[in-house]
Every structure is written in structure tokens, then in C-alpha cells.
Length: 64
Length: 520
Image 1: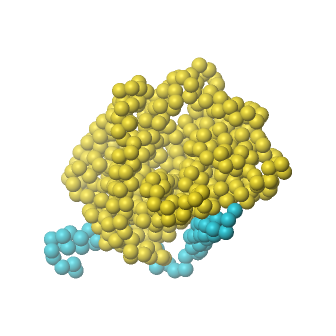
Image 2: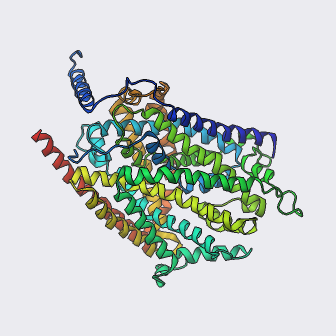
Image 3: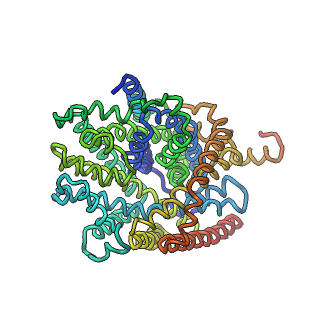
């Protein structure tokens, strides 16, 4: 195995392995805040607000 | 819009493993190493990673974004989601590809899955102790899949190929019928770690092979790794290798098919995410997981193992040749070969079943939300259609002609078309601004802003170049096959029938959605 082969292997295998375990570590990290907790009603209201804002933008009216 | 109780993934790790399981398949362990060895390993990795950054990751992010957006508005299938994203009467009909592609691929994938299970069983029971004659393994494979004559595996209705095929079909439908969380998610939660453990055990065995035959000192593990990763290619410089357009095309194709983008599955899976779930991290982790299985595990096992026992000539081949002819011969030479052979084919079976499980979910979601069927009826209906397709593929088994035809027109051609459609809808209809808003909602880590430019301009051009180059090279000869082969003709007639059936169902669904919207 040549030096270039070692470099390619270490970069490819090391890079993808490190990338995967970095992602997994972040996924398994416990959430540090509760600001993303929403109820079903909050979610529905957000969707309705968003749709309303988008319709106003499409009609050329300023969003509230 | 579905009136049935909403389904959601029960955990973030569950959805990540389900999406990764959907992506990880035989291509990770067989096709990728085969391609890398064909294009001198090291050089191949450059177009491979370029395609990952410019095509694979952006398309995956786009699908997750569109899927979750549609899901929070009550739709979980491509026709429904496209209709939400694009207020055009043609949009839901374009979504037919997001149903047809996974359903038709399922029809032949379950057959391949049954080979893996059958081979694992044969390693357990000693059925693959065939000695060191390479022809014995080719003959075994040919007889097992019926490659010599059409319908030959029906000559013994209680033979292993049919028994394992029925077992795989039954297992898929039992798990799918249990639902998204109790079936697919739960199975992937233990199957994916089991797959990783099997792969690591095989990897350890391969890396500790040393120099098995002292009379051939050049056939050792280090040179096997060199066969996979070295940059040298005779008298060619790296730049001359990189000037090979076909290598860029095949690298892009590998990334594309390996990540299951443009497949219709990710968009459906993402639609079951909650509105404030972190889809940016989940999508990135699923891509990283697929790459880990492909590069870090697949890239370290297949070619080095084949090289150590068979030399450079033995370490090349297509997916089936490498997997079902070459590797069993390698296991025959290897100490503990029978155990490793079982682990290898069991891991391929797990990789295959976690993929096939995902393939029917888009159509099930559509039948539920479009036609108002409950899950049991939707599963039963798809069981019928899917089994009919599998029967056709098993019947026309000579040279695997039916499988090859459907794989070409659906598993390659339609995937390219669907991916082009998704890129167009995301970049130019839905809009990168809204797409990024969707990806950012609930995310701890923001997707790089450059993504908007890449998905709008770079990815479509990249995709079109690869698609046109591929079509230019392959489509002409395929059209000639229509007049020459009955298997090809019947496969295409069947495909047209499936298209017509799904388009009719979409028409009914659109009318129902209009009626529901008028009432509300």
C-alpha cells in the first residue's frame, strides 16, 4: 500500500467515521432547553399564521 | 387530507435509523467497493465526495424539508405533498413517481433479499460447502435464482428459493402492517445496530487475515487495502484519471442511489416528523450513517478480502458477481469462513430488509390519505400488487431479464426523473427561502446558507448532465430489447399497467381532496 493510498484511506474512512459519530453525539445529547416544546394547538396556530402571512405576501400586502 | 389519527415517529434516533436503514443496502457493501476498485480506489473518492456535497446532501435536505412541510399539513405521500407545494393541477400526478418507484423496486428487491437470507441459511446448514472450484459457486447461484431458464425455480415448489421468498414477503408485510412505529421503527431500532455488529465482526476477521498463503507473500491484507485505496493506475497520473468522465458519472450515480434520494421514501418518512423536530440534524445524521456503512465498513471489507485470496483479478466485478460468486469462494479459503459467511449474508439480509420495509410506506400513506383506506386494507392491496410484480420477476428469471428491465426503467430512469422534479419543485416552486426556514425550524445547527445556491443552480445542472450522459449511453440499446425479448415486453406492459392504476387512484384522491376542502 502506497503513502498516497494510506492518506486517501485515512481521510475517507476517518472522515466519514468522525462525521457519523459527531452527528450521533449531537443526536444523543439531551435537550438543554424547553423553548422548542409546542402543543398541537400552538403548531396549528403557527401554520395558520404562516399561511395567512404568505397569502398576504403573494397579494403584495405587507405582512402584519 | 387524511382523516385518520396522525402517525409520528416515536423517537429521533428511531427515524434516523429507519432512514439510514432505508438507504443502506447491498450497494453499500457490494456496488461501492466494486466501483472503487474498478476506478483505482483513491481517484474514485474525489468525484464521489464531490457528488456527496453537491448532489447527495442537498437533495436529502430538500426532501426532508418538503416532506415535513407537507406532513404538517396532513399529507404523507408524494402526490399530496407535491399538491401542497405546487398549486398546479399536474403536481399530484407528477407525484405518481414517488409511489411507483419504491413499489416497483420493492417487487424485485424482496427477491434479492430472499437470496441473502437463503445464503445465510445455507452457511448455517453447510449447504455452501462447495470446495474451491469457482464454477461451483456460479452454478449454485445460477440454479438458486433460476438464471438458466424462465420459471425454473417453480419446478420445486417447496425448494429453498421459493420458501425463503415467501418468508421474506410475509415478514415484510407483517412488519409493515404493524405500523410506522411498532413495525418499521421498532425493527430498525434493533436491526441497524445488529447490522453494524455483523459488519464490524466481518471487518475484524478481514483485517486480521495477514498473509494467509505464505507461498504468495504479495497477497496480504495491506496490499488488499492498497487495491481499494491506492491512487496509482499503471502509468496514468491522478489528473489523467480524473479526466475520465465515466468515473464522475458513476460516482454521482453511486451517491445518488446509495442515499436513496429521488426515491420517494425520504419525503414520506420526513412527513411523519413533528413541526418543531430538528430535521436538519436528523437528515445529516442519516446521510452520515449511510456513508459510514458504505465507506468505513463496505470499503474496508469486500475488496481487501477478495484480493487476499484471489488476487487483483478476483477483486473486481458487479454487485451480484462479487457478492454471490466471489465472496463465497473467499469464505471457503478463510479460517472460520462458514461463520463469517453466515454473518456476511445475514448482514446483507438485514441491510436489504430495512430498505424493503421502507419501500411500501409511501404507497400505503397514499392509499390511506387519498382513498381513505385503513392501514390493514392498504397493506393488503399493496401485498396483492407487489406479489404480482414479484411473481413476474421470478417467472422471467432467465438472465434475470425482468428484474434487469424494471431496475433500468424504474430503479434508474424514473429515479433520475423524480429527483429532477423534486429539485425543480424545491428550488424554483417551493423556494429555497421557505425550504431553509423549514430546515431551520427546531434545529440546533443551521444548514450552511450556501445550500440555497447549490440546490437551485448547481444540483439541477449536475443532475441533468449525469442523467443525459447516462441516457445517451444506455437508453437506445434498451429500446431495442423490447422487440427482441418476451420478458422485456411483459415487464414493460406490466409497468404501464401499474402506472395506469396509480394514476387512476391519484385522480380519485384529487377529487376527494377537492371535496374535503370545499366542505371545510
